[in-house]
Structure formats: C-alpha cells, structure tokens
Image (cartoon, rainbow, N blue to C red; front, side):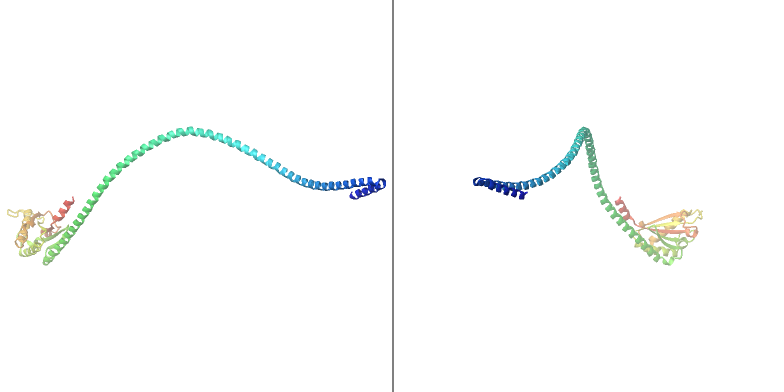
Length: 330
C-alpha cells in the first residue's frame, strides 16, 4: 500500500510538472509536502492510536475479567446475604422465644424465690435450734469433762490404793508362808506323829490329832503333846500380828456321862481350852490373841474317826491395815 502511494505521488508530480507552470508547481509542491507531513503525523497518530487501542483492549479484557469476578462475588454475596438473612430471621425467632421464656421464668422465679425464702427462714430457725442444742451439749460436755477429770483423779487414787493393797496382800502372803515354814521347822519331829502344817485361804492350819495330845476321852494333855504345843507357842511369840484360834473337834461317837464332859460339845471345848492354857503358861503369848472354841463332831476332816479327833490351831494374820485401806477406798 505504501509503494502504491509513492507511485501515485510520483505520477501526480510528473503530471503536475508537465502540465502546470512553475509557480503553480511550487504551490502544489508545498501542498504535497504539507500533505506528506500531515500524512506522517496522521500515521504517527494512527500508530499511537493503535497502541492505545491495543492497550485499551487489554484493559477492557482485564476489566471484563474483573467484572466477571465481581458478578461471581456478587452472586456469592447474595447467597451469603440470603443465608445470613435466613439465620437472622431464625435468631429473631429464637430471641422472641427466649424473651417469652424469660418472662415466664421471671414470673416462676418470683414464686420460686418466695418458696426459697420460706425454706431459708425455716432453715435459719432450724439452724438456730441446732445451735442452741449444740450450746447445751457443749455445756453438758464441759460438765462431764470436769466430772471425768475428777473421776480420773479418783481412779488414780484408787489405783494407788489397789497397788498398796496388793502390796499388803503380797506381804501378808509372804508372812503367812514364812510363818508356816517356821512352824513346820519347829515341829519337824512331830511330822509323822499326827501333826500337819498347811497353808490355805491366807491362813496357816496346824492340825494335831488327839492321839498326839490326849488319852482317849481325856482333856489332859500328855507330855509329848505338851512339848509340841510349847514349841509352837515359842514360834508364835514373835508373830505379834497373828491371831490364834484353837478349835477342838471330836468324832461321831456319842458321850453319855454324868460328869464333865457330858457330850462331844463339851469335850471339844475343854480340849481346846486345855491347849490354850498350856500355850499361855509356857510362853509370853498375849492371851488376847488366843481364842478357844469347840466344833464337836460337825466339821470332820474326813471319814477316818482318828483324824476327826483333833485340835486345829488356825493362825490368821492381822488384816487391820488391809481393812483400813479398803474402808478408806470406800
């Protein structure tokens, strides 16, 4: 197209040169040059316009894409908006429902509060009652605590007395055992001649069969028996805290006599009295410590009549200290 335009221009120029005068030619030449400059400018403008057009088309494409995205976003926003609107309507409905329930709860709460206040007042009264009872119990406990302390003091005192009593009993048992050993040793020569020494119930029992002391039916002590009684009395001289009980015993054979002894009762008493007299006359024993008694036939030692005819001397330790301690404890 450019070559064609130059050819045409050259042709016109040649025609113009051949056909027009020089002045006219100059004018045409100027016009041509002006047209050529204008054409060049127009061409440059056209190139610029084409570049702007290309840029505008590019921007248009970009804008069209943005528009499409905006339309898509608008659609999404519309969907979201409709969803939010639906949720909003639901929330409004729930809010209305909650307001109704709140109003009902308020009304119910007033009744419930009134009920709770009544219960609270009753609980307060009950608590006050319990506190009063607790104070009363505390007072009683305080009194019982004081009583318990007194009882503890009393218990300690009683324990001390019991320990002291146990000590006295132990001492008494030891004394009785020692006395029994001393008597057994002093009367050792009479061991197999109808004399026995035993310890039971806190006492010492010296049993002398009648054959060792008296002839049959007699109340007079023979020399052998007197020797045994004197040795026993000498041992008892040193035992000032021992009470001496002399018991006379007979068998079941009846005595019928017009003179003393008339019966077994008198025989048992007379024999016990005879033993006491010998012991007093032949020692320094205090007569106040001796007791003579008769048991007749009614406390036999067994089935052997010879063993039932006997004198039993029962030695009892003085228990005054123990009795005083017991009485003080009471």
